[in-house]
Length: 199
Image 1 (spheres, helix red, strand yellow):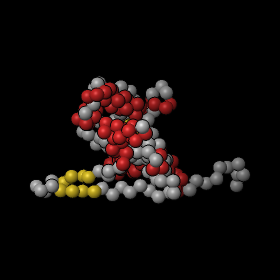
Image 2 (cartoon, rainbow, N blue to C red):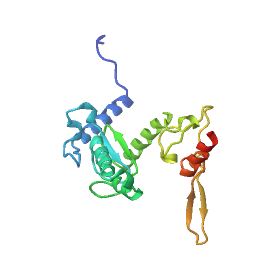
Image 3 (cartoon, rainbow, N blue to C red):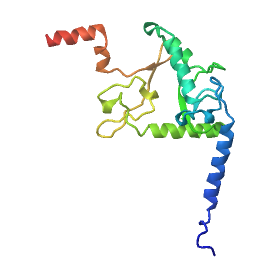
């Protein structure tokens, strides 16, 4: 036998390489619906990523879809950025389907199952990174239970994501958000109370 021959490739490794080549071939054909360039042929290596929308299957490069959403919010004056304006910015530029988040991906998924697996893997990776806004319980994350980053206290316990629900007399469901002491500090009355207590 040839001592310089490469070691035999296992069936599992051969399958992994074959699947990767298939992903590359499929992704190479995909164009961004905003800039109309093939995503994997972008001049900068860092720009060769897809931005997968949670609500539809239109193809975008990550930078273009982020710019689109940022531009939609920026078009509104800061003091008039309503929840309706933010919702409009989160819609697909083509089909207007609402997408609450964008998932970066090196490859274009073949089907819904592969897309779901890509999103789940990304969220799992993000959940290992501590949230800067939550700051181990010393801060407050504006995204609440929608945040992909880890919300854990200094002792390692996770923040509870229990959602309290109430219904009114007509049977309409309401989500009751958690009330924190800091909520009262962020009002004009709360700030006045803090100033008076320091005087």
